[in-house]
Amino acid sequence: MAPSTQFEVSQPPSDAISAVIFAPDNTNRLLVSSWDRNVYLYEIAEGTEDATLINKFEHRAPVLDVCFGANGNEAYTASLDCSVKRIDLSTGEQTVLSTHEKPVRCVVYSPQHSMLISASWDHTLHVHNTSAPASTPITISLPGKPHALAASPSKVVVAMTARLVHIYDLPTLATALSSADPASANITPWQQRESSLKFLTRAVACMPNDAGYATSSIEGRVAVEWFEDTAESQARKYAFKCHRQTAPEEEGGGDVVYPVNALTFHPVYGTFASGGGDGTVALWDAEAKRRMRQYQKFPDSVAALAFSNNGKYLAIGVCRGFETDMEDFNSEGRTKVFIRELGETEAKGKGPK
Image (tube, rainbow, N blue to C red; front, side, top):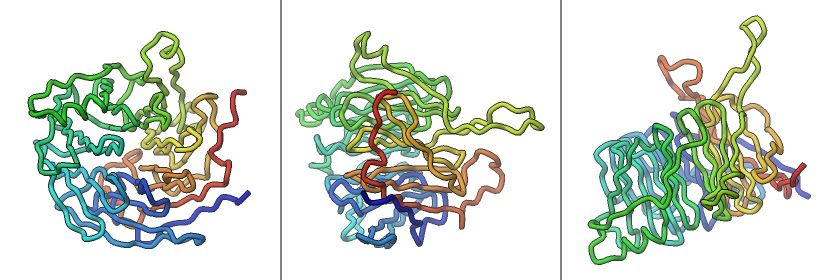
């Protein structure tokens, strides 16, 4: 079995990282979005501990999220300038798909339905038909400010302020998009839930088997829930503390609590990784309700995580967070991207205790 290895990417962003994501059809292709107003495209050289910067794509304002589209040559971005853009990664051409009234926090692409969904701080979702990019997107009003967005094969989960969670059915959205008048479609959530976490949601990730999702909060906790709305299924949901450190006794003891900034599920084994303001990444077995391993501490807060499409690589975005000091914030020179090549069974669950 090949041992795991880890290396640091050269030429990282110059400011805080907002997202990392691997291409759906290319294990070695990685996008990183940053507050430095750029999206970075890297290629991992097979058999080496190196990732080359292929190109970077400048925006007018900080980029708050990025995702790939149908293939490794297409990307979509969410920007502080309120725009949702498509990038042709081969030519560098950027096209505005839609414009929100306030900054766009998240974008997620559904390959099953050729659909892009953007979530904005103007309390709306825009649902775009990427097969007809010139078409007007469907606008869905939200009851709260969205902070995290994730899609499974059949659902999209929106986590908002006030512990609000809305789950939408993707086939229903696709039917509305293909109707004669999509703009007049009356879209309602498939489910409306209250978050199991008492504090602000920081991240959400969906299980690859389409069974459920995990959320994390600013208060060092993660919750795991299932989509099926039965008493038996809902009884399975649980939450746990993580990304905490013991405070010195001279400071009163107790826990120092950090935000859990990032979550990502392994596409093969269904386990998931979490990254926190404590600078650590942990692997969890959702079914067995246990931590599998915790990696060595990184030099700063873990801001973003992503597994490659085959689970071979884990990308880790590291930069200064706001955990200790918000004055004179500057992440230049401290922003790093690490790539971990996992051992063959490193992310495989061990089953119940």
